[in-house]
Image: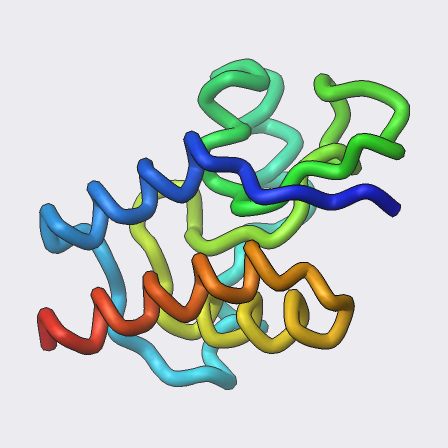
Length: 117
């Protein structure tokens, strides 16, 4: 798996946090706050891949197509606001799989959220 940092999404997340568009929830909340598979599919179909891509910090070059959901990894939001719980979860998962640039981006996003609380 060749997963790399999606810089456009990283910039999008930083802008959302700067504008106060985040939820300062707890780590375990992500299982309840994460968009469902159906919500993700509807969003991708309605908004297209360019808008969809802005909500995932990673992309997987081994996926069959950049138009598939499988191409996008490491969500950080509910497709509206950044969720602190998603950032914490993403940082942990990225670290487990040695995606250091993604882990570091999540760490930066968490710091930005915590500074605004």
